[in-house]
Image (cartoon, rainbow, N blue to C red; front, top):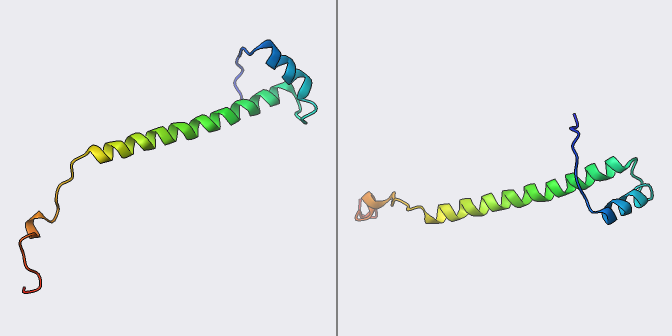
Length: 80
């Protein structure tokens, strides 16, 4: 279900959209706006995921790691 909302854009942008949306085979001015907003949201979501991924990788790099093989380091496995 779509939610109605008001947005503000530059007058020159609005005039351009109003003139061009039919030539670009959009059913209405609203469809043009919806698709433009969806494209921007898609790019922003991808950028946000990348930022989260980068932060997580930095946190992994800062974490100290326990040596899981510490108890076995002095053992000679070939002569066991």
